[in-house]
Amino acid sequence: MAIVKRLIIVLVILASPLVVGLLFTYDVIKIDWISFMEIQPNYRPMEDPLPLPARSIPIQGAAYIRELGVPVNPVSADEASLERGKASYDTACALCHGPTGGGDGAFAGFLAKFPPANLIKPDANARSISDGAIFMTLTDGIEGRMPPLRDNLPTAEMRWDVVNYVRFLQSTAQ
Image (tube, rainbow, N blue to C red; front, side, top):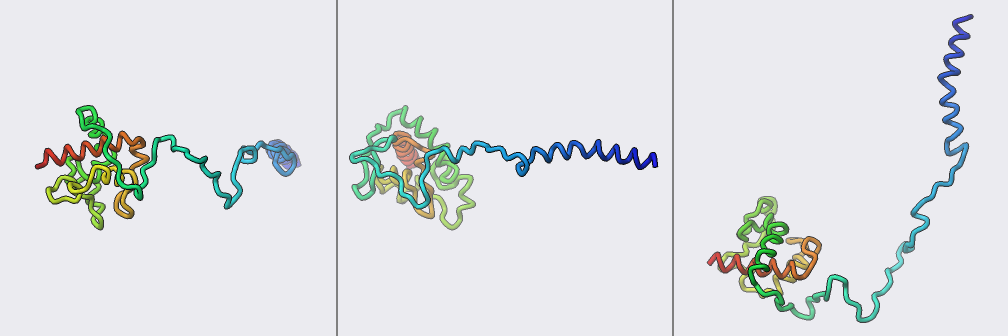
């Protein structure tokens, strides 16, 4: 009988934290926690965003629209531009196109279906297109072949520096 009493006392002691814990569960004491989703401005499902004001310009600067033609390179190919272009090229382009632009980058082997363009080959398409077309390719990419790099190279000046650096690679490869 003494063993049963001791067993009951031990079980009561062990069960008391469980009972106290159950008192504070959501079902017993309902605490209204703040949901930050309830107090934020949001759109209802399927609601369009607000239209842009008339004559507005994106914060990154003027947008280039393909239908309006290709832009002209406003950045001179000086030493500073080429250094910035090399740094940006090495970060965003060299993995696919290679350090010299030959299309032999580290990822080229994984892109067998659509290999990266050889930017320095004498008969390469990249030599015959304008600076503006290269800029637009960097900005918008080529669907299914090259991703748009406007997020990797967020300013237009960075993309123009890469264009200048690609032209430098082409001139030194001849």
